[in-house]
Image (cartoon, rainbow, N blue to C red; front, side, top):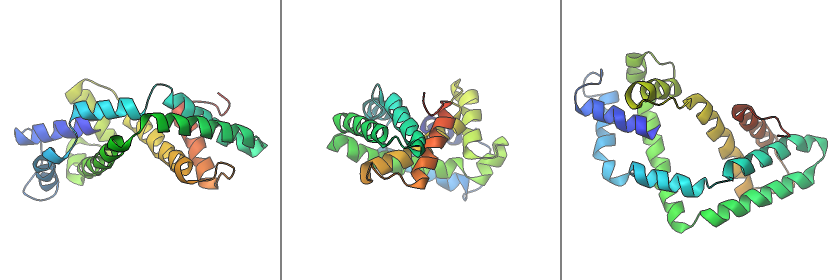
Amino acid sequence: MLRVCDRLVELYLRGGLPVGGPGGAAALLDSYWLGRAERLPDNERQELYARAVSPGFEHLLGRLASAIADAARGDDDAVNWAADELHSNVDRHIDEPALAAIATLRAQLADALAILADAELLNAYGARDPWQLVDQLARLELGAAPDAGRRQALAAAGTVVIGWLATGDPTVVPGEVADAARSWLAAADRAPDA
């Protein structure tokens, strides 16, 4: 998503982006460009992702999502075990500098999403939502096919599960966390016991 937004800014600066006057998309793109010194560059983002989403992270998140989805059958021990495993993995890979960078990245993602959700840009590319716009531009401009809608679904559901893991009691799984776990499994194309 951020690489696509960076590419949109490049296109805009070269006059190759079909946006109008000083308001709307142009104002968002200008602001994004002017704030570039406060954002993480691509190489730092990739390094942060590699650290935060360490090898095994997705597997452990999948185990936790499966355990939560299966908890309705009364297997609370599996939820506790999977929660402890994922929590330990995150603790090993996230330190204070990473937390500070994550806060910066979160703001950067919000700015990028505002650009990608702009009606003028969506209309210019015939996209129905930001995720379709990311897919189209990644294919056209970056030669990639990211399946942004699927990644967004994984991220949204994973955020709920990880948020619960960080602040919740692993012996009590709220309904919205169970729903998020099932959504994560569906987006990951995994059965609950996979």
